[in-house]
Amino acid sequence: MKNYFLLFAITVLLTISAIASYKYRKGILTAKNYLTERGIYRNQIVSDPLIDRIPKNEEEHIFGLDLSHHQQHINWDKVLENPPHFIIFKTTEGSSHTDTKYEKHHKEAKNKGILVGGYHFFSYQSSGKKQAHHFLKHLMLQKGDILPVLDVEFSKKMHSDAWIKENIAAFIGTIEQEIGIKPIVYCEVAYYNRFLKAKYGSEIHLWLSDFRSKPNKNFVFWQNTDKYKQTGIQGTVGYNLFNGTKEDLTAKCY
Image (cartoon, rainbow, N blue to C red; front, side, top):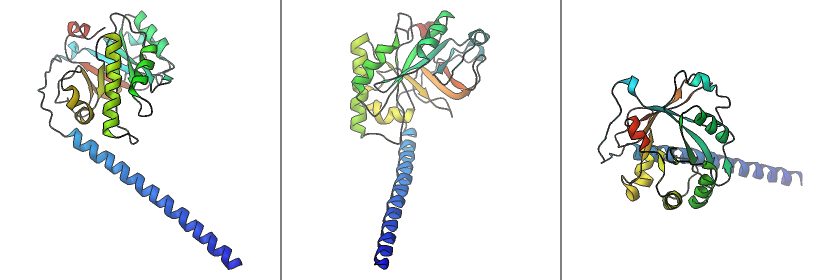
């Protein structure tokens, strides 16, 4: 009897070990596949020519920040010592989450005369249409604000390409139906190539993230680092260059 129980215990332990080992190896393979696919689409040649309107003189750069609840406390008087031309705040995520600092920071920045906008972080856990309605409900969009932004990023837990394309299209379509214009889309060139290029081409305004070099693609905003030090804000934040003049920036407002 004792030998039976010992054999049973050993069998159970070996089974658990095998399952854990499989999941571990599967996780590694998933991560490798994710990085490999990301690299493939990142390095694809983009056919659209670069239309570069960023001033060569750094003092004339039109720059802005992207902020969220991670920037808990902002000293606006200090921020105005080196004022950004615009700030785009995280507004919502998925179909139920609202950024806890959005309303407060949004109003404070506006009161300081800074051009503002809001972005939605896309989730792969709910429909694009539902997320779009949630975003618009909390955006507080007003005349003169930067156009709404859809933030779409690679994740290790993603649906099929067909699901992603369908729900991004549903989000963009819902926004356009409600306010009369498509949102700006924040993403990497690799993401654009894989999920957006075939359907939208140059129809959408892009806010491209590339920390290595200027994107070889027509863009509205270029996020070139998330390690920028802004006076009045603790830690580091995203730094974004606008591809144009102040007058051009006004044209990208609601």
